[in-house]
Length: 111
Length: 114
Image 1 (cartoon, helix red, strand yellow):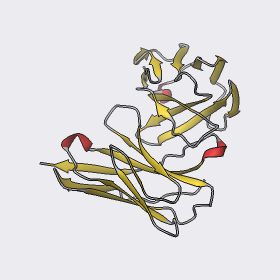
Image 2: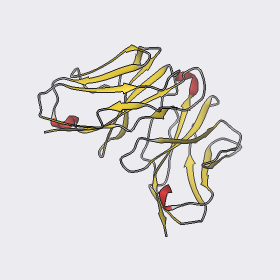
Image 3: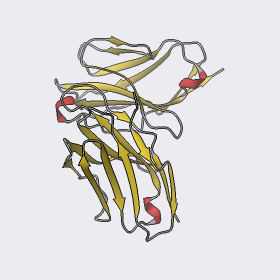
Image 4: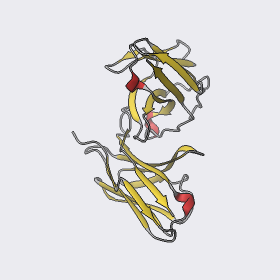
């Protein structure tokens, strides 16, 4: 699987949009981009995934660049409960959706 | 709709004892994953089952670790004998290998070996 690079930590003001970047320059054509987050002591929570088109759901939006070498997760109105570690993962779905977790980005939402 | 269910939530035992962690995947999912999380190494995949068959166990650290999936609704991860360095949070996840749909994780078992 392609590797990803994320900033170690980010801060965001409550109520503002949180934009979390991820680089995956070696992504191959059949690899999806998945985003998970982990709130302290809980299991990783699925947020969103995509192949090449931008995606939106009730939790977040995923913007994937045209060359697919990077993506941005957007939390439109961050709340204190969004404080967590956010993981960007690329994976071939036909390989059983095996996920390789990196260090992620620790997002701190501040009042 | 019940998610992935793990038991126990917490386990404290002395080194040398056998430890068994349990997982019930989401109904209809045919893939099951065991992960371990520590401060030093982060989240690591230990083993992956597809249709109850172990596909990749390259992440299993030692022969002291074993995992089974006797049917589609149950899996165990066993450590025998346990050692203090096995202390970690162990997560189980399930998914559908026939689609691009994501894995879903349980709440984990926090294991402490004294």
